[in-house]
Length: 285
Image (tube, rainbow, N blue to C red; front, top):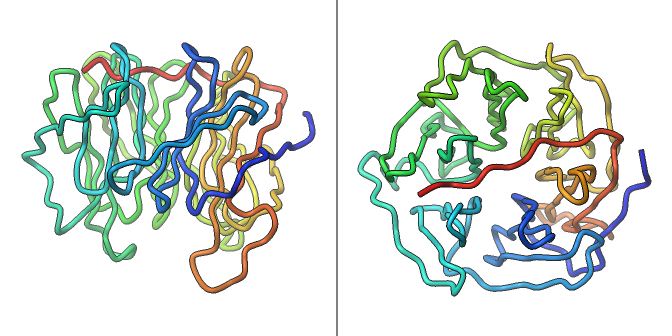
């Protein structure tokens, strides 16, 4: 395991969704509250930032180029030139829930979670957007939807609800269906809340524990295999990238209240944990 490195950039207000772009050799991420998208080389150099037309929740790359963006009240297909086309959402009630994190499965389906506007009510849900842009409500009762990932054999979907815990589902890779929701892992009240996540090649789940000043690595049986201390109160998300997918990138956020931010709050971090991650997939719509 190598030492933790900090990107030499201005801090994000709420850095989220680090995602490795194997076509460009860059790590991309968003600042939710700053309404920007950022991109840098793996060492943090050549930083580029662009404004977004609203508050994003997450994004994924598209197979044909560009991205699919989850904004708080809409999904949009975003082209390389920045133009966007909204996705029809017949099942979505913007008064009850808003979009947050998302991830793409191997058959090109996008999974998106929502959250309660008051951060407390179980009015959020888990959705699936297929390449034909059909939109499916897959589960409900969510408080704050966050990290989504799959086991290496794609038989399990992991799902972080920051208000309730970390769950696992049986996953059918061919149909994109889920079943048998159960609690995946337990942790202490002082460990923080599960936020963004990533799965490594050994089948362990890495989770940014917001408010807990740490990254936890969970074994496939749900036990805590490793604790990585952080110098920020709110690590927000994690993702593997770089050469051989051997680098873990971590975004973080500033305090939400009037607490003065620490010197590292809001920065992006990177280190080599000694295990590679799994390839990320692209949306085929």
